Image (cartoon, rainbow over all chains, first blue to last red; front, side, top):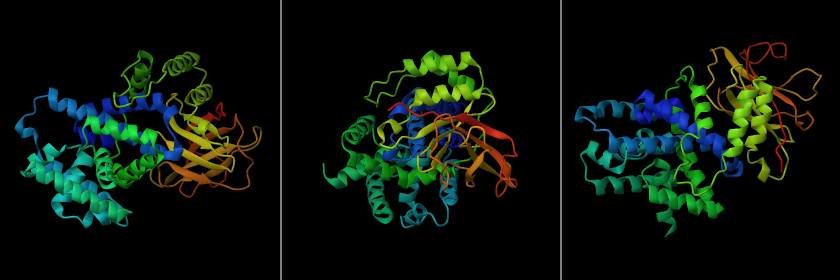
Length: 147
Length: 237
């Protein structure tokens, strides 16, 4: 869990906070978990990811980020590593491979790094509207490929 | 909203691209409509393999006492996206009693299992639930034993198992008898184990996870260190 949180939040102290908060929420909402609706593991990670996203968006508002802190190369490496670590027989990997590079990068950046449409557009130096439509088209292709 | 629009919205919620209002809208629709809930779950499952690609990092010392502190203090409030009101008093009471009791992990496991209740309350077949705790009282796994001896083992934290070793899950169907292996967690992750020839699990049945040589215990009895153990409890239906 800590690895997922650190990947999104980049700082280990924030990641520990996120895992801690997610565990408290998990204890409290245990009675809401319904195994007929999905796996416990998926449920736990959804709570964790939502917590990280909340912290990320809050951080964006409250913490002034130096331009240097946008380490695009490092972000790219994290996204590529996530893709490379998907099992070679993984359907998700096969279907992601079917997307063009920019679309794949955009979708992975949002899930793995928690980037918003705006952040993806900024990093790719592409118009926001184009990024939104790439992502939507890519998601449609992924859904068709994986179903 | 068309089906296609809804599919895109669901995917954007799963990726984290949707804004708070859209997340709340989709969660609300899923709560009312099981068909939408299952589309949401399928979308989550499509991307879940990416969760496994993150580095495995150990939690720092003292981490669990921070979590306990949060539970005691009331800690963070439930996320605003959840419309449901959660009664926290039972959990807090149980956690306080848990710490106060300090009678060891088994007592705590029973308390927690009762408090958690899990969602077997809503399923037709009765099952038993055990929360496995390590020597420090940290919850390491939740075990759900079904009457057909399907055992769902949900690890709550990535276990640090040396290479050439494997986690093995045990239970004692007969309180005075020997432990019986339910299977190996060969992937090192949460798994569903199936075994035949055992009676349906009882409340009070002991579950534990030990670290054994690759391939499982050579003696067919636990030989390695215990990662966690706990007594099962039948949830109140």
